[in-house]
Image (cartoon, rainbow, N blue to C red; front, side):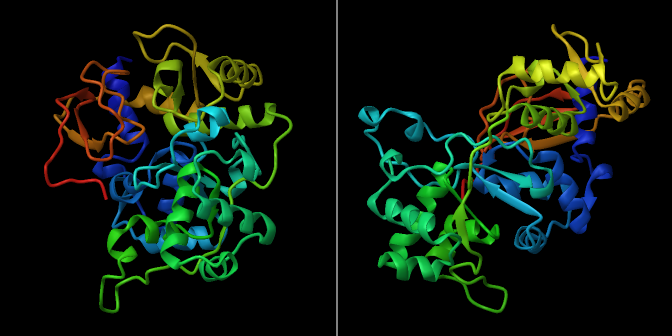
Length: 350
């Protein structure tokens, strides 16, 4: 199979073509199970990733999945300010609506490997004094509502908003519901604007908490779980297809785990996509699906996706301009072939 044929297949595998989109709560959960572990800008998830894969996407479904404990979210990649030595931390962690986050299915999150769990206050480089106070409060009191944090830290509500946003951007905290994050990244809600029965309150009712409560001692199960996560996302896994992934273990660790899965007969090894060096591994179901679509004739089908999408593989998997993972840019494919990148003026980062 050529790279363009594989790209065309991937768009269907990830439900980005009109005839493969999913519906309702079950469909939302299935999409998030496929996308979990991929970090994208906060403001791109609902607007560009989920709504493109789910017919009639309903934000309330995402809220329900989070509030019932099925789904979690947060930044898993370490912020550069956290990784630097204290002598090098000359900049503040800036809260921004394009801060990368991902989702995780709580019953299927063995792939999560904390980078710096239970961050000590003295190590929290780049945080403002307010954010540091909020972090200390959450470490001492555990999961807390917004009003409790305001009262416990004795800070202004606006100060707590910014402090929470800093901690989200740093990858230190999460919340019960996704609406907690919406309340921070939506400028109208933060300004108290909006009217009518459908307007959302300025602050969400969900609780805020530390993202990682403890360390993971054995990495081996997590790396194997990472392989399954990637196989569900791409069907076929090889080094190039993982270029956009930001929170993975080293490729050598993934490769060794994939070989173990192949030895156990759980995945297949082979040469599924031509033009790439190195080993390739695939789900058995993906192999059967690839075989059935290999002979499909071109139809001229055109699919446009956000540059923040995991399938923004122009210039990586197929020839074309490599487009940065920006939530305000787009990439178009025609029968799996990348066309010119676009940046419509009507789109803006929220």
